[in-house]
Amino acid sequence: MRTTNSIKNMSIGILSALVITVLGFISRKVFLDSLGVEYLGINGLLTNVLSMIALIEGGIGASIIYHLYKPLADNDKPKIIAFIQLYKKAYRILALLIFILSILLYPFLNKILENNGGISHNILTIAYFLFVCKNMISYLNAYKISLINADQKQYILTRVNIGFQVFTTLSKIIILIYTTNFILYLIIELLVFLIQTIYNGWIVERRYPYIKTKEKYNISEEEKTSLIKNVKALFFHNIGTFCVFGTDNILIASFISVVTVGFYSNYTMIIGQLGSLLSPVLDGIGSSIGNLIAKESKVKSYSIFKTVYLINFWIYSVCVIFLYVLLEPFINWWLGQGYLLDSLTFIVILFNFYITGMRGSILTFKTKAGIFVQDQYVPLVEAIINLGVSLILVQYIGLAGIFLGTTISTLSIVFWNVPRLVYKHVFQVSVWSYFIKYLLYMVLTIFTCFITVSTCNFLVVGDTLLSLVAKGILCIFIPNVLYLTIFYRSQEFQYINKIVGNLFGGIIGKVKRGHRKVI
Image (cartoon, rainbow, N blue to C red; front, top):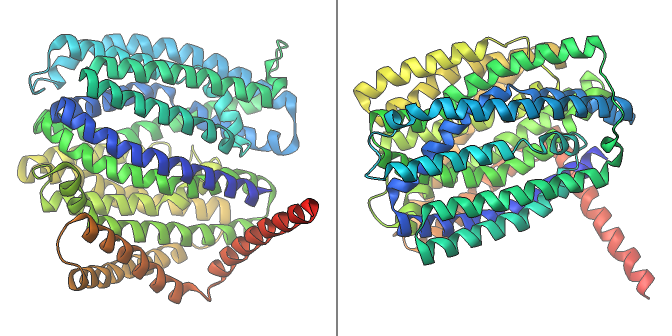
């Protein structure tokens, strides 16, 4: 059942990401042509600012999801209801606090947006509070969404969300083409998001009708103590994560310009869209890992981790090679000349993408195992290193210095600490095997990148659309063939091969049974 749910979550997630990716590129091109790079920078910056406010959530959702795994596995409905009721109450309070904090932060907005490219103060004010409203709406049914995610059934909502996202994107494109009105663009996005949130909540209530009870349920004091500890720890983790990954746009706007935020957002959009294609794979597996850890042995968990680790490497290695070859030529083809960042910044961005992606498998096991308290203050140290290094280096090497802060803070803290905790508390084996394999994977990535780039440069000339397609095919074909040759006989690959074989065998069996019924 875990494997089936993982495959469903992955397949629906990838389909959704593909649809949204195509529409996203069209929408971004229309946005730039209609409003310009200044508005693109403002859009990215406001998203970052509101993400900072959302830190007040403090990891309540992740903690409660962790506590829901066992009750769901045991079908303990009273316990499930108790956590859901607590979550619902907490988020009502949080929505109010977030609104108050948003108002208090507003006077400081002008300071951050001093170099805003000439956009009027009224437009910035209205846009800011539309972002605030969307932020608050996201908490309306958060407790219901967490329940279906913990139950490994998020593919049900993903299918619905595809339709909403397609409608939203098409509506925004039409608004931009016919009105070039940024505020109307945001209003349409807000209204559809509200309807989507309400509808998703209704779907969850239909699937789990028992959560609608008016009878009050309470969690035990032991569970409450554990929950408070985890929330406190996750709050620090969220602050650290935001300071490392969420402050880039704010720093760029403050030390360089809002226009540069717009340029950078094109890179992050492409990397983010690619990430949205990748995340269903690891997220789909991740939704089953909590159940795995709760019910299976440490040996079984470690065996599955090694397989997930290989998948993690394979995916991100191919993708970073793909991005290195194609990202900037694609921007030139897609948007035209004049939207590129400097070469050093580009390399650092890609390296950060790789090291962040490579920690996905180990971080998933850490989160699903509920390891929150053991390193609760580490993210604060990481955040201090990141901001300190970024503020110093931006003075000397400009934009690349901001991103090098992320690189240095990640390698100095998270890179070694997260594996140490998971191997100690979950697998109870030596962590050195993780780092040895990580080094092997990195060497393979560099070697494969060199082979792929050399082949692309030798066989393909120019940056036309046809050339980009040809390079893209080579970037997918060469690494995958090489990795298939290297890992085919490994235990991890054979496990993956067995799952895929069983999946296709099951599909073929269903088709044959259906054919016999027709006859």
